Length: 252
Image 1 (cartoon, helix red, strand yellow):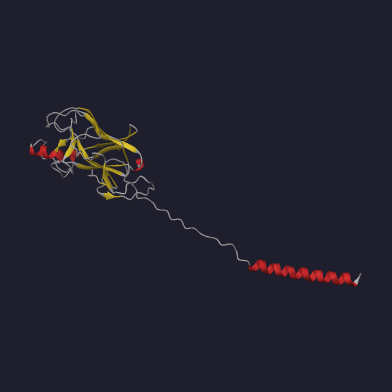
Image 2: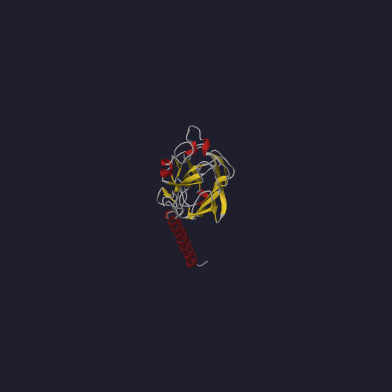
Protein backbone atom coordinates (compact mmCIF):
# COMPACT_ATOMS: atom_id res chain seq x y z
CA UNK A 1 0.00 0.00 0.00
CA UNK A 2 1.21 3.52 -0.78
CA UNK A 3 2.80 5.25 2.19
CA UNK A 4 0.94 8.50 1.46
CA UNK A 5 -2.43 6.74 1.61
CA UNK A 6 -1.57 5.13 4.93
CA UNK A 7 -0.48 8.50 6.35
CA UNK A 8 -3.66 10.17 5.12
CA UNK A 9 -5.80 7.47 6.72
CA UNK A 10 -4.01 7.86 10.06
CA UNK A 11 -4.50 11.65 10.00
CA UNK A 12 -8.21 11.22 9.12
CA UNK A 13 -8.71 8.78 12.02
CA UNK A 14 -7.01 11.19 14.44
CA UNK A 15 -9.24 14.07 13.25
CA UNK A 16 -12.37 11.96 13.72
CA UNK A 17 -11.32 11.02 17.27
CA UNK A 18 -10.60 14.68 18.15
CA UNK A 19 -13.94 15.82 16.68
CA UNK A 20 -15.76 13.16 18.71
CA UNK A 21 -14.28 14.33 22.02
CA UNK A 22 -14.97 17.99 21.20
CA UNK A 23 -18.65 17.30 20.41
CA UNK A 24 -19.03 15.17 23.53
CA UNK A 25 -17.61 17.91 25.73
CA UNK A 26 -20.01 20.49 24.28
CA UNK A 27 -23.01 18.27 24.83
CA UNK A 28 -22.04 17.62 28.45
CA UNK A 29 -21.56 21.30 29.22
CA UNK A 30 -24.95 22.37 27.71
CA UNK A 31 -27.45 23.36 30.46
CA UNK A 32 -30.48 21.11 30.83
CA UNK A 33 -33.98 22.54 30.20
CA UNK A 34 -35.54 24.38 33.19
CA UNK A 35 -38.74 22.94 34.66
CA UNK A 36 -41.16 25.42 36.26
CA UNK A 37 -43.56 24.22 38.90
CA UNK A 38 -46.78 26.22 39.22
CA UNK A 39 -48.45 26.06 42.61
CA UNK A 40 -52.24 26.19 42.43
CA UNK A 41 -54.21 27.28 45.44
CA UNK A 42 -57.85 26.32 45.70
CA UNK A 43 -60.14 28.35 47.94
CA UNK A 44 -63.19 26.53 49.22
CA UNK A 45 -66.34 28.43 50.01
CA UNK A 46 -68.04 28.21 53.37
CA UNK A 47 -70.81 25.64 53.50
CA UNK A 48 -74.25 27.17 53.09
CA UNK A 49 -76.82 26.31 55.77
CA UNK A 50 -78.96 23.42 54.47
CA UNK A 51 -82.48 24.13 53.28
CA UNK A 52 -84.14 21.75 55.68
CA UNK A 53 -86.78 22.00 58.36
CA UNK A 54 -86.22 24.03 61.52
CA UNK A 55 -83.06 25.88 60.51
CA UNK A 56 -81.49 27.26 63.68
CA UNK A 57 -78.94 29.67 62.27
CA UNK A 58 -78.98 33.22 63.64
CA UNK A 59 -76.93 36.20 62.42
CA UNK A 60 -74.24 34.11 60.76
CA UNK A 61 -72.00 35.79 58.21
CA UNK A 62 -70.97 33.57 55.32
CA UNK A 63 -68.27 34.19 52.73
CA UNK A 64 -69.36 32.89 49.34
CA UNK A 65 -66.68 31.65 46.93
CA UNK A 66 -68.40 32.84 43.77
CA UNK A 67 -66.45 34.70 41.11
CA UNK A 68 -68.99 36.81 39.28
CA UNK A 69 -69.43 40.41 38.29
CA UNK A 70 -72.99 40.76 39.59
CA UNK A 71 -72.21 40.45 43.32
CA UNK A 72 -72.98 43.71 45.09
CA UNK A 73 -70.09 45.66 46.63
CA UNK A 74 -72.40 46.24 49.61
CA UNK A 75 -72.92 43.63 52.32
CA UNK A 76 -76.67 44.22 52.36
CA UNK A 77 -79.31 46.13 50.42
CA UNK A 78 -83.09 46.42 50.36
CA UNK A 79 -84.98 45.32 47.30
CA UNK A 80 -87.14 48.05 45.68
CA UNK A 81 -89.63 49.23 48.35
CA UNK A 82 -88.66 46.16 50.36
CA UNK A 83 -89.75 47.73 53.66
CA UNK A 84 -92.77 49.51 52.10
CA UNK A 85 -91.28 52.84 53.18
CA UNK A 86 -93.32 54.58 50.47
CA UNK A 87 -96.48 53.71 52.39
CA UNK A 88 -97.72 52.06 49.20
CA UNK A 89 -97.37 48.77 47.34
CA UNK A 90 -95.13 50.34 44.68
CA UNK A 91 -92.97 47.63 43.01
CA UNK A 92 -95.39 45.00 44.34
CA UNK A 93 -98.46 43.39 42.81
CA UNK A 94 -101.37 42.63 45.12
CA UNK A 95 -104.12 40.11 44.34
CA UNK A 96 -107.07 39.25 46.52
CA UNK A 97 -108.37 41.31 49.42
CA UNK A 98 -106.12 40.08 52.21
CA UNK A 99 -103.31 42.64 52.03
CA UNK A 100 -105.65 45.57 51.39
CA UNK A 101 -104.87 48.63 49.28
CA UNK A 102 -101.79 49.76 51.20
CA UNK A 103 -99.32 48.52 53.83
CA UNK A 104 -100.19 48.90 57.50
CA UNK A 105 -98.72 51.88 59.36
CA UNK A 106 -97.45 50.10 62.46
CA UNK A 107 -96.87 53.29 64.42
CA UNK A 108 -100.45 54.42 63.86
CA UNK A 109 -101.79 50.92 64.49
CA UNK A 110 -100.04 50.82 67.87
CA UNK A 111 -101.41 54.25 68.77
CA UNK A 112 -104.92 53.06 67.91
CA UNK A 113 -104.34 49.69 69.63
CA UNK A 114 -105.02 47.97 66.33
CA UNK A 115 -103.20 44.74 67.14
CA UNK A 116 -103.87 41.30 68.59
CA UNK A 117 -102.73 40.87 72.18
CA UNK A 118 -99.74 43.24 72.23
CA UNK A 119 -98.29 46.14 70.18
CA UNK A 120 -96.48 45.43 66.93
CA UNK A 121 -92.73 45.01 67.57
CA UNK A 122 -89.51 43.63 66.08
CA UNK A 123 -89.81 45.56 62.80
CA UNK A 124 -87.21 47.92 61.32
CA UNK A 125 -89.49 50.22 59.36
CA UNK A 126 -92.87 51.90 59.78
CA UNK A 127 -94.97 50.14 57.12
CA UNK A 128 -95.57 46.40 56.76
CA UNK A 129 -97.80 44.34 54.49
CA UNK A 130 -100.45 42.56 56.56
CA UNK A 131 -103.69 40.63 56.23
CA UNK A 132 -104.55 41.60 59.80
CA UNK A 133 -108.06 43.08 59.96
CA UNK A 134 -108.58 43.94 63.59
CA UNK A 135 -108.33 40.29 64.63
CA UNK A 136 -111.95 39.71 63.68
CA UNK A 137 -111.72 38.61 60.07
CA UNK A 138 -108.87 37.41 57.86
CA UNK A 139 -109.07 37.34 54.08
CA UNK A 140 -106.71 35.55 51.65
CA UNK A 141 -104.38 37.45 49.35
CA UNK A 142 -101.09 37.31 47.46
CA UNK A 143 -98.28 39.83 47.38
CA UNK A 144 -95.68 39.58 44.57
CA UNK A 145 -92.60 41.76 44.19
CA UNK A 146 -91.28 43.16 40.94
CA UNK A 147 -88.35 41.06 39.57
CA UNK A 148 -84.91 41.94 40.95
CA UNK A 149 -81.41 40.54 40.44
CA UNK A 150 -79.94 38.35 43.17
CA UNK A 151 -76.66 40.06 44.09
CA UNK A 152 -76.26 38.58 47.60
CA UNK A 153 -76.53 34.98 48.86
CA UNK A 154 -79.44 35.50 51.26
CA UNK A 155 -82.86 37.11 51.33
CA UNK A 156 -83.61 38.38 54.83
CA UNK A 157 -86.96 39.74 55.97
CA UNK A 158 -89.38 40.02 58.90
CA UNK A 159 -92.55 37.96 59.17
CA UNK A 160 -95.47 37.02 61.40
CA UNK A 161 -97.16 33.87 60.14
CA UNK A 162 -99.41 31.10 61.43
CA UNK A 163 -98.56 27.39 60.93
CA UNK A 164 -101.10 26.90 58.15
CA UNK A 165 -100.29 25.11 54.89
CA UNK A 166 -102.09 27.85 52.99
CA UNK A 167 -99.61 30.53 54.13
CA UNK A 168 -96.04 30.56 52.80
CA UNK A 169 -93.33 32.56 51.01
CA UNK A 170 -92.10 31.64 47.53
CA UNK A 171 -89.14 32.62 45.39
CA UNK A 172 -90.17 32.79 41.74
CA UNK A 173 -87.87 32.52 38.73
CA UNK A 174 -89.51 33.33 35.40
CA UNK A 175 -92.88 33.04 37.13
CA UNK A 176 -92.25 29.54 38.53
CA UNK A 177 -91.77 28.80 42.23
CA UNK A 178 -88.26 27.42 42.85
CA UNK A 179 -88.23 27.79 46.66
CA UNK A 180 -91.20 27.54 49.02
CA UNK A 181 -90.96 28.13 52.79
CA UNK A 182 -93.60 27.87 55.49
CA UNK A 183 -93.28 29.53 58.89
CA UNK A 184 -94.83 29.31 62.34
CA UNK A 185 -93.72 32.47 64.11
CA UNK A 186 -96.70 32.59 66.44
CA UNK A 187 -95.37 29.62 68.38
CA UNK A 188 -91.98 31.21 69.09
CA UNK A 189 -90.79 29.99 72.46
CA UNK A 190 -89.65 32.61 74.92
CA UNK A 191 -91.69 35.41 73.34
CA UNK A 192 -95.05 35.99 75.00
CA UNK A 193 -95.85 38.69 72.40
CA UNK A 194 -95.34 36.38 69.40
CA UNK A 195 -98.74 37.22 67.91
CA UNK A 196 -97.52 40.73 67.06
CA UNK A 197 -93.74 40.25 67.06
CA UNK A 198 -91.92 40.07 63.72
CA UNK A 199 -89.46 37.16 63.54
CA UNK A 200 -86.26 37.23 61.49
CA UNK A 201 -86.49 35.03 58.40
CA UNK A 202 -83.91 34.08 55.76
CA UNK A 203 -83.99 32.21 52.48
CA UNK A 204 -80.68 31.06 50.90
CA UNK A 205 -80.41 32.28 47.28
CA UNK A 206 -76.90 31.03 46.48
CA UNK A 207 -78.09 28.88 43.58
CA UNK A 208 -79.86 31.92 42.10
CA UNK A 209 -76.96 34.40 42.14
CA UNK A 210 -77.21 36.68 39.04
CA UNK A 211 -80.74 35.44 38.26
CA UNK A 212 -83.77 37.68 38.24
CA UNK A 213 -86.34 36.51 40.79
CA UNK A 214 -89.50 37.69 42.54
CA UNK A 215 -90.91 37.15 46.01
CA UNK A 216 -94.47 35.96 46.43
CA UNK A 217 -96.14 35.98 49.85
CA UNK A 218 -99.21 33.77 49.89
CA UNK A 219 -101.80 34.08 52.65
CA UNK A 220 -104.57 31.63 51.84
CA UNK A 221 -106.21 31.44 55.24
CA UNK A 222 -109.89 32.35 55.43
CA UNK A 223 -111.14 32.63 58.97
CA UNK A 224 -110.69 34.66 62.14
CA UNK A 225 -108.51 35.16 65.19
CA UNK A 226 -104.75 34.95 64.46
CA UNK A 227 -104.59 33.46 60.97
CA UNK A 228 -103.03 36.61 59.53
CA UNK A 229 -99.67 37.17 57.81
CA UNK A 230 -97.59 40.32 58.29
CA UNK A 231 -94.34 40.78 56.41
CA UNK A 232 -91.72 43.29 55.27
CA UNK A 233 -88.13 44.57 55.57
CA UNK A 234 -87.09 42.49 52.52
CA UNK A 235 -83.42 42.83 51.68
CA UNK A 236 -80.46 40.95 50.20
CA UNK A 237 -77.53 40.23 52.48
CA UNK A 238 -74.32 38.26 52.97
CA UNK A 239 -75.48 37.46 56.49
CA UNK A 240 -78.03 34.79 57.37
CA UNK A 241 -80.41 36.03 60.08
CA UNK A 242 -83.18 33.72 61.23
CA UNK A 243 -85.10 33.29 64.46
CA UNK A 244 -84.52 29.65 65.49
CA UNK A 245 -87.30 27.16 64.91
CA UNK A 246 -89.76 29.28 62.91
CA UNK A 247 -89.51 27.22 59.69
CA UNK A 248 -92.01 24.40 59.48
CA UNK A 249 -91.09 23.25 55.95
CA UNK A 250 -88.89 24.32 53.08
CA UNK A 251 -88.49 22.96 49.56
CA UNK A 252 -86.30 23.98 46.66
